[in-house]
View 1: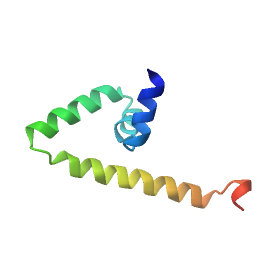
View 2: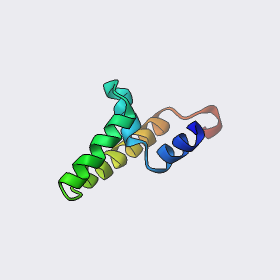
View 3: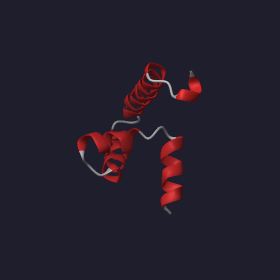
View 4: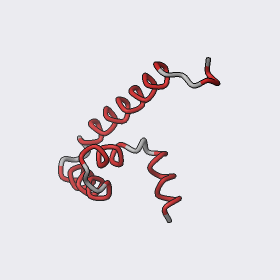
Amino acid sequence: MNRLRYFVEDQIFGVCAKLGEKLNFPASSIRRYFIYATFMTFGSPIILYLVLAFWLELRQHWRRHNSPTIWEL
């Protein structure tokens, strides 16, 4: 079951998991509140989610670029 959960988190950017790690809050609760907020506001938090996903990917790219491994030199 955990393997499936990690696969799904990787496929949908892991924004809630990363936010949960930063805030020391369970990722499942963040997902639940995100779903509630999405239904209550007719989908507008999806834009925030996509911005956060873009920012996390960009940040990860910067980190890889600034400190390459021995194989990437």
